[in-house]
Image 1 (cartoon, rainbow, N blue to C red):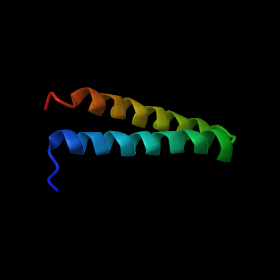
Image 2 (tube, one colour):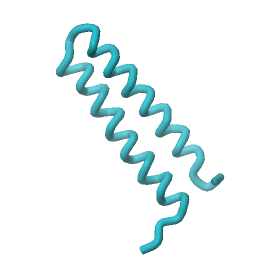
Image 3 (cartoon, rainbow, N blue to C red):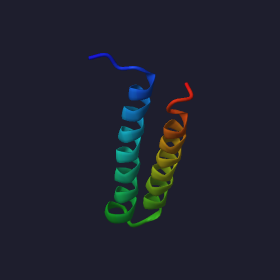
Image 4 (cartoon, rainbow, N blue to C red):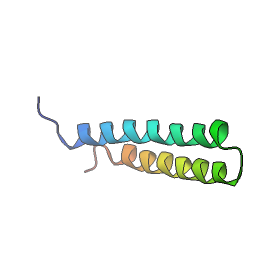
Length: 60
């Protein structure tokens, strides 16, 4: 099974979405103080990077 560039970007996007949602969930449910805001901000950053990776599929 060979993986081309688009498949790698698709898997990277999927993994980054999972990590981003996990970080946002940690910030929302586990840490209720200032550190929760940091976890949520990093999670939003992961989602933004996943959006860019998704936009790159087919163009690289």
